[in-house]
View 1 (tube, each protein chain N blue to C red):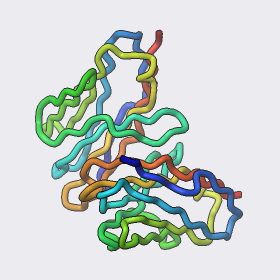
View 2: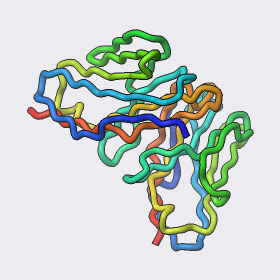
View 3: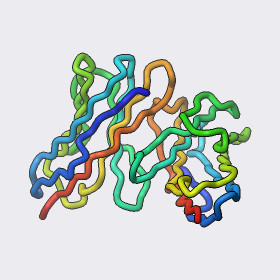
View 4: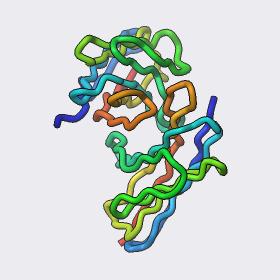
Length: 111
Length: 113
């Protein structure tokens, strides 16, 4: 069973700061990487996806992928209290077409 | 564009009963995946359907089954319910596969008593 590991947190940052969320994965054949945000009592919402090494920016969010280190991260700039949620990292297993999720990092942004 | 819809949203069943959950994907999406989410295990993959065929299956017992119709709508069935089946069941749709961008429905909260 391929694994996706995330720090469970909670991660607490002040409003306006940069929140950094990290994820490592075990399957070297993985080709697709996703970040989902899940508010309490709600379903996951796709916020970023990345397929190539390097950085991908979308508004206040930046996803970073390093396949050699099997590491993917999400940076949230100018964090807002509305960013408080659990962030799930998901990795597409190479060959099996399955998406494997980490258990999530709970982020709290303090006003 | 309408999102993924799931029915029912909440369900209470008794041990030993069976249950059927329904999912309508985003228009144009042909891949539908099902997940079980619990506080202890997180999000776990159940199975994926594409063009009415099951392409992938997770590590769940045979009591969990599913199907997909020609209009891409999908159903999952759990037979002989156990207390441990209490969970949030999520459906996600994608244009092509479960490893491409997936969009989740609101989920069905199943409680087994």
